[in-house]
Length: 220
Image (cartoon, rainbow, N blue to C red; front, side, top):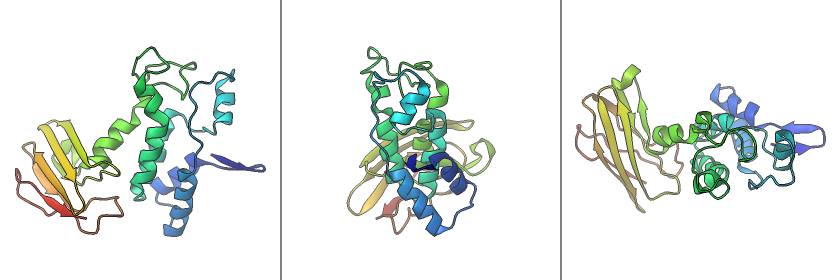
């Protein structure tokens, strides 16, 4: 996403390197620094005539579709703060309806004037919010077993509902200075582990495993 002479430091390739397990800790940190530095999005596109020109001016090489993989790489690297910052920057104008007569659908590109303004492939953050922020992730096909490892990032509370073949998993999480307090209504399947929140560097100890129906508590 940043250019230095003829060299482009490409967010997409670097994110895929993390997801493929091809980076060590040092390389992952370098990539996170790259992904953390981005130009705030200007969604007007008034002076741009092509998608390519719009993306060049605003340093947006990844489309909303591929942004999913970039933000996922941030979560996997333990940098939910970067993922959340990118998510807020890129999607705030879509959900505000400011440029689309208050329609809050998701755009095919970062600018409402290009592509469609209702594009399912742009909805990656929804999956990331349930699987990483809420931390509800299957550990076997069909959610036969699953884990709950919330990482709220900058948020102090979260509510999530995830439908599964065995029923809905409903989750309420609150975070204060010392702990996560989790109230979960489990679907009638085995909870494999409520374990340690996967990605928050602030969390030193994870959620204490409790029987189904009880509220686990994790210390920060």
